[in-house]
Image 1 (cartoon, rainbow, N blue to C red):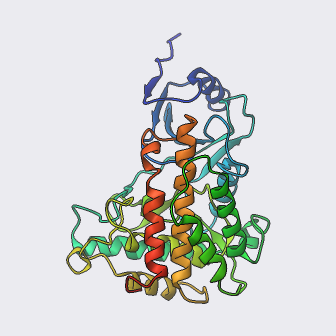
Image 2 (image 1 turned 135 degrees about the vertical axis):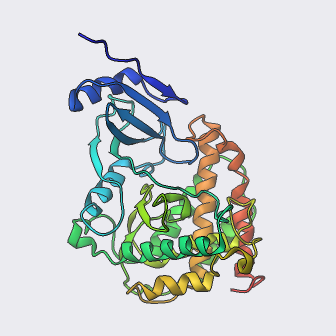
Image 3 (image 1 turned 60 degrees about the vertical axis):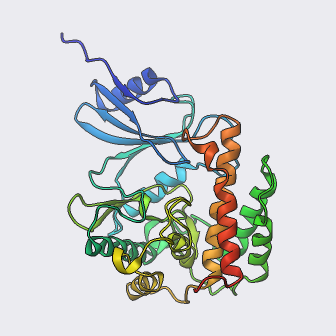
Length: 348
């Protein structure tokens, strides 16, 4: 009888590897394990898992205390399973494990897609036409997601319908108040402005990704086609303009501010203007309404509060990435950008 080869581990692991080996063997049979921590990201710890011929991705909650409702890997798995039968490109979910005693937290496994992920919104090294095609594919895929009827895929109870922005502003303002770090100048004022300038609820409901951006999309190895939308941690039933506003953040932040394109030359880069990107989305979407400054300010506010939470977790030694503590000041930069939009200091 031949011995099973030893496991190959690349990067830090926040659980007992032997426990994962036992778990996988019971479900897929004996094989050799190759495990790689995926660098980047400030949310749920993520690993490439190769088990024999199976190539998978494991997503789990971070260890230690977490905010109520945060890092909900069960919701991630649920929305992936719901969308797997639609034309929305997602990795196929394989299994969900709610028993936290296995790896220390709940987790799930999904198929591993082979493609390209772009973490720099400026898309360095590409031709202008390639950059434009990537951005337009991002808009088309978002419209495709928002076209899915939640009730048709079993997600009618995935979130509370109506008053999305009112509830979201209350949620993120509440998380800001709970922060244990230093107060971010003007960030609470941005939250107050949002409450005072909230548009009337128009009843639009869609599957809102919550973190829809270039870095959470996998593109075909050779074409400007999105083959997978990743990181559904913040997904819910929400307003489609929340995703669209969030996706527009790069046009309002600089390259040093989490990879924005405000300091890029649109004409030379080939990257569409925000107006062109938004028009492309609406040309493929049945979503009503129009993108307003409110929607991008809301996105900047929410993103800033997320960075506040990242810094809080770093102080507790509970962040998903090694550079988490250094990202705390990003919240202040995003607050500045939000105030610029509010004050009309930049053309909309």
